[in-house]
Length: 418
Image (tube, rainbow, N blue to C red; front, side, top):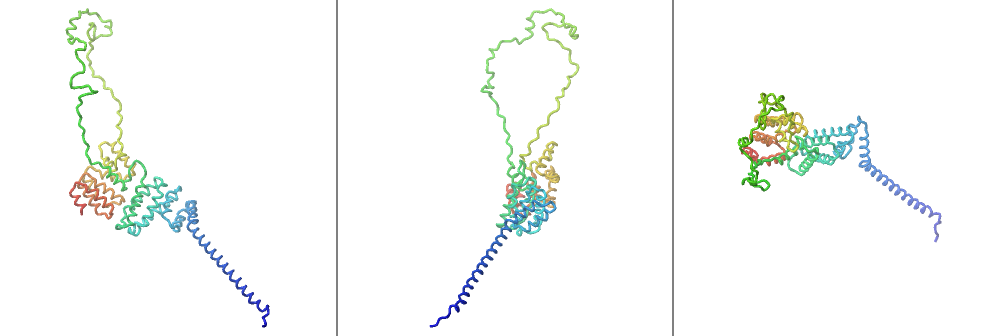
């Protein structure tokens, strides 16, 4: 049987080898392309989440003063954690960065106040948690600014009871407590913590007068049984001076050697007391000198409401001392004027304050109305409670009803039971 020449089979073998060699470069190329794609994706992720944020922060922190607003706005648009960035920048060592971050923060709060609470509660909770996390790095001025923002957020109506509302209230309450400046004073006039501290420190019990008990003995020596010694043991002394003078021999009168020095007594009897001329003028009054003023009491331990009621004291030094204490608790001139009206001795003046407070453009008007619910007069308390009972804040209503439960007024009791 004839066989084909070997030269005829060579083309099939070469084509087979060529196909095999052709397949392997394609697989290698595909592997290289996939590796490059994975490397590109990994580099993009690393650049977006690690390298670029740090680089953008570095560029912002080292930017010139005129470029800070533009670069900060770019960073806030690109980052996924804008509230955390704002919280960090609020404590920056560069004043221009801290002020720009504060401006962005206030603008965000103003925008949120235009919407209903259920739409912003989650974002507001993230902001409160971010500010609370950086609170230890803030100076007192920034802490005061954050405290005012937290007070504004606490007055928002965030809708009905829900898990998100509870998380928001907890975050804001924690921010209020930790943003207050750490000192011996209380919180500012707009702080809710000041209300709870006032209620916890209010003393309702009357002072008990102590009676003085009779003292019958001192150092175990009875005082109601006479002297502890016998009077007979004392030497007997003459008590009749007339007999003593008669028993003595009469002495001759002799001129005093100092007669020239005593023109009013030319002759002096020995053994007799010297007779001085009667005084014709009253003794001169000796000025005891300036008296030191009494030390002023320490108002640092009093609540803010107790200090406010000192503004109408009769002593002007006490009034000035109370004003300085309130100024140290961050009371402005308008706050002092309102506090003086709140504690006015006339009931009509205090009632007028209750009528005007709901119409005032103040963020802390609820706090001042809450103060008026502790007024000594029943009509003032009733008017303040009636103004607060219409609030839509559920937390304020719960606290108001809990505190007014012990009020002795029947009108107020019927009001809070509606």
